[in-house]
Length: 115
Image (cartoon, rainbow, N blue to C red):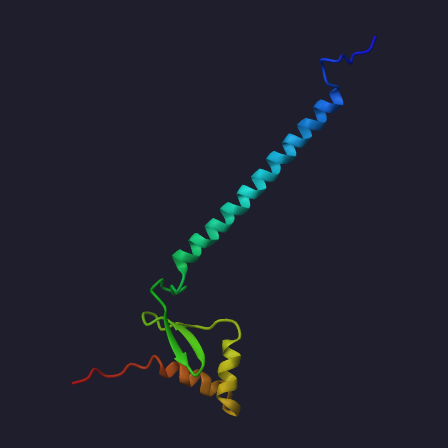
């Protein structure tokens, strides 16, 4: 007489459904993890967007030609996005990077208070 009866599924069938359930739960956990990571990235972006990485104060956007510099008036830091330094050098032609850096530094020169 066989162990298999019409009322009881085979052991292989139990294993198959157990593996399917485990795989479904694994996929759900992976999806939840990815969604949580995306939410954390968005939360960090909102927390740090346009904040100075050095001192934490708000960054101000200053236009230099057609390039926007992110500048901190507290610690005098200047941040450039990818490709912006090359754009600044191109804008100032053959005079090169010394003129670019001079122009950037001029943005932060302190002007005496008006009388």
